[in-house]
Length: 391
Image 1 (cartoon, rainbow, N blue to C red):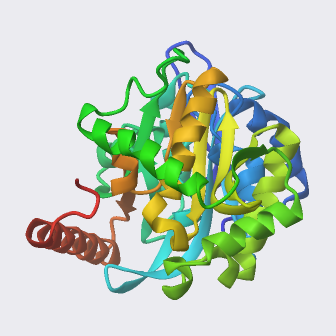
Image 2 (cartoon, one colour):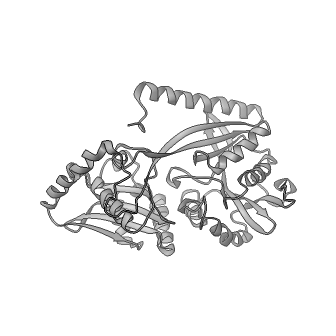
Image 3 (cartoon, rainbow, N blue to C red):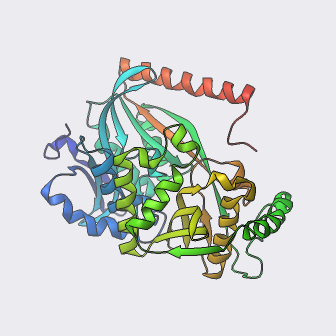
């Protein structure tokens, strides 16, 4: 285990301003850890890390529900007494490149949406350097893995520091997350949507008209983490193919608890947005949405496949985009991989990747080879069968 009390966990980076940055490792269960939370929250209130996924409450919900047997730790970077950067991590023994590995992994997984080194937007290279020096001093790891890191994100600066010290790195492209910049022109909420799908969007009017012939159709918004509303969402999400392939939230008590907790936190902070399209009072499409600092995010969506011919998911997206433009929201972040239904609304994507740093050991070199081979095989597969994220 990482010991936050040992001198080796300290790293000092001198700055040209003669000030210094100090990085250290703190165990999540350390009684003094709670003192960091107000400063951590401050780092995510504005700037480049002002997203729900970087807030301490998000990581706490993940730790309690999706990593309960682990004891995560956080690399913190201070400038004097001020917290200016941190990196939430966890230790695992997992198979990487077909080899068991002592892994330091980002405190995240598929349900975390994205991950990065959190900092206040200033002195990125110095913050990354301090965090890296702290990790470098620990020799009891084979690979450091950060999942779904935005391209040109803060973690890339940390990898640059590792390469400068002779440590090998690999970047494995993962999800191409679509987003739509929204116009503040309420008369044309779809101004930034791709022209080539204008016909598809126009056909939604006919589908909506036919759907209204089936019964009373309503578009609603709930900002409370009402248990009944959340249960409806989980049921709707599990009503189709997700239940069949075993990926539905309701099939895992841990996931139900995680998303319920996220909803409760978001309600308290004013970020929760549960949009619904209902027919006869029953939801046929829903968004588990979050809105923060003028950006709307959808970690999860669901629709009733019995109404597939009416495209209820697209109809709901249409209503949501119009509502967001009216409320002055500047961006719709679809999250997740690029998919056909998302391309109807946007051609903008934000690239993400899994980032790896390998220790300078024999096992580290083997792991690097395994990860590189895996990435090459996937590229070959996409070359011959097509990339599911390309349209």
